[in-house]
Length: 472
Image 1: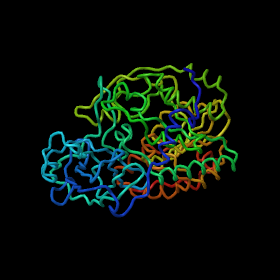
Image 2 (image 1 turned 90 degrees about the vertical axis):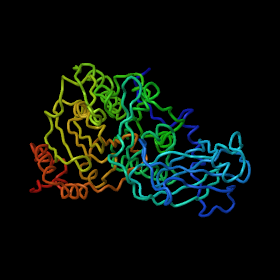
Image 3 (image 1 turned 180 degrees about the vertical axis):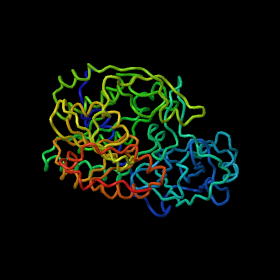
Image 4 (image 1 turned 30 degrees about the vertical axis):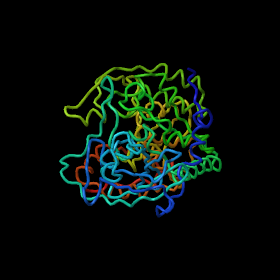
């Protein structure tokens, strides 16, 4: 398979996505007037039965009986945010309901499969339930979750697949439901994505910056068909975004990572390996019109060494799980870091300066956790690399002040259900994050903090985003 970047806004899958999106989230009605519903009930969570928790999270269980045969499959829709919604069909046989409410034998009744049962994130205190039939939708209930009792520890955030491959579970982004096709963006979520993509394109055009948005694929999207315990759905939130007409700046290297096979992701981690990051960084550089031959030559000379890796998934198990993985041994970006404010996650700002880079240029990255493993490669493509941990959220004031030649927005696929925006306030995030650090976190920040070349930091226009260390 040719290792070229594909801007994924065409093709059979995306045409199918557009057709499906045309009726993705009809407006809900506040009452059941006109709904073909005879009776329905929510078993869990409820005031009478309380809340039930299982491995997948908070259980949502109930049943619904219809007053007439339906031409289209009924769907129970759950929504706790305006940007996305969870959809499940009626999949549970409920002979008890048929006997109790229809006074008929439960076996082989036409409405025997009238039950639903699925899970939502454990942290929810409320959510809305809807019934959807075709392009019609009715509001069933606003559900207040009663206090959860009897849970001594939160559900494990790891699901084990085939041959020891670990995948993320029970996270706030509902990764499993995204993979299975149950969680999709609403019309409002898609509108926010269209606004963001248009804003990114406008910044690129008005400020003459070469720009791309890299969406790091989820591990299950690449390796799930082979190793994930559940079956993949027909469409996920990323497919919806790629189907938008504004998605021409998106780089989403699923085919290329699939061609790498097992070397693309860690067995015990959610993130891509150094080799997977190298591939993604190379594709991204070519999308930004860095000379392809120079990029390939640089990457081909890299050497890797295998060692045991615990990862963010293996570390969640008891005992921790490790697996061998290859790590870049011939280069380390840390030797070229000239500034790092040391903040954890959002609000972190890091700058590298590598004089031998392919381009004598400044590249500004608004990225997420998947960006870190790309530093080894990006800093050799661009002499000055500025990284802001923001999961693709853009601070327009910072972009204008830095005025980079290259702008990269990067987010992880599982974050797509939370559309980024172009009005991010990095300075406020830095202030708030630093103010909230406790003594242990301040000590850790002090160890990570680097202020080796403040003259360059000022030259790059970052002075206003630099804060002195807060005393503990």
